[in-house]
Image 1 (cartoon, rainbow, N blue to C red):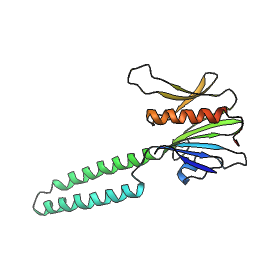
Image 2: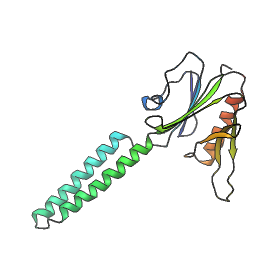
Image 3: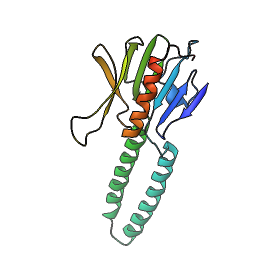
Image 4: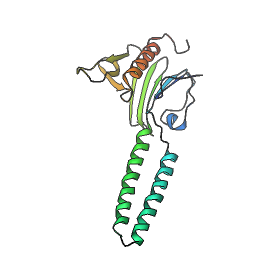
Length: 186
């Protein structure tokens, strides 16, 4: 098994994978066939535990200040502190949830399977490996972003929307190599 880290956001796992539970939870049980997997994930610098600690620390500071002002007779400060912390909690929850998004591309000798979702498969595509194309199409707009497409006979899907242009080009090249290779073992 070979694990190659491309940029910060893309994990390339060749042959039988070993990756974090959150990444593998979306993929079916590992079979005996050789598989190459590519896991595309957001650049998540804030973990769930860090978000919880940050929220608790901010609540402690905010409510301490609000209680101090409440003892001085400025009681309207407390409900606004509560609203502020509710907004912060909602934002942190949305951030942590968005950080759990994964796109997993699995390539075997016979097929290509793409699974995308947040913590569980929300979308899934499967293509026979024969005649499947990986294309990096440029935008029709001057400053638009390119699209990484996996297609077969006009039907397909877009992957890597959260990557930068350079990362998307690198992933496209690697996927083209894997799809056109004679065997996964090589």
